[in-house]
Image 1 (cartoon, helix red, strand yellow):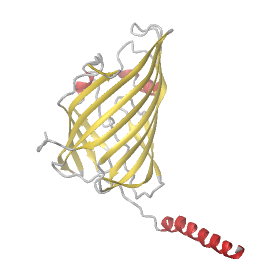
Image 2 (cartoon, one colour; image 1 turned 180 degrees about the horizontal axis):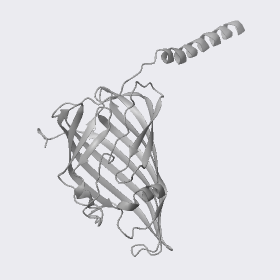
Image 3 (cartoon, rainbow, N blue to C red; image 1 turned 90 degrees about the vertical axis):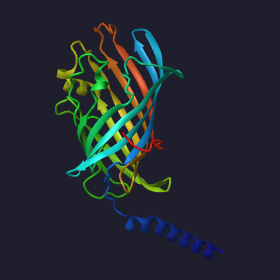
Image 4 (cartoon, rainbow, N blue to C red; image 1 turned 60 degrees about the horizontal axis):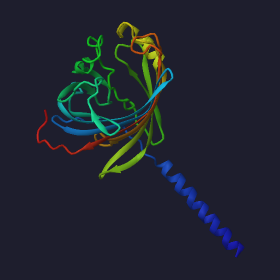
Length: 290
């Protein structure tokens, strides 16, 4: 009996080693790329939940907000390997403690169209149409939002295998040479509605003191100093065949201190927030795009 037990253990161990080793030896590499098609349309719904606390002096106020946005992307044209993508924001709704409200800090972006020039590695070369976003912020209307706005972390130049990591430097508009470094990890493959998808983890940390210093010349006079950090971790599912986003889930933690001495915040302010974001591709109910 003891001999039989030993044989069983040897066979079991050999099987485990085989399962662990064979896939590693045969692991396939993937070249992640965007594949554009003129008139291709995708529609997305984004939900962002924000919870936290805002303190000013001895007073504190809880924050419980939600933003729900739907938008459509249409590939309007392709030239020199770059696609012109029109993003139309269909609706934006804000909720506070479950009740819808109109925030003075968020302009009405309904039917706003953003034009983006993007290449197959997800690098954004130009952005137009963001002027409406700055209308509610005095002094920011003349800012030149450029290639850095909303730049997704790029796909790597070479093939990647499951477990590989790479970094992308994301430029920030009007911040000189300041860039945010995004670390990405190829987590694995999975099926999404019958589609083969690559799950990519993205990690980003933004230091507000360095960001504010880099943007000093672009901020309105009297803007108070800000310190703190925001850390973001997100998981994105990309269609392996086209590179299009199928789904995103992300969490962010923000700790922000705003210096006092400003009429809007004479005692200084501290904000501690957590943000949970989900983005899903939804059915396009319109037969033609804008």
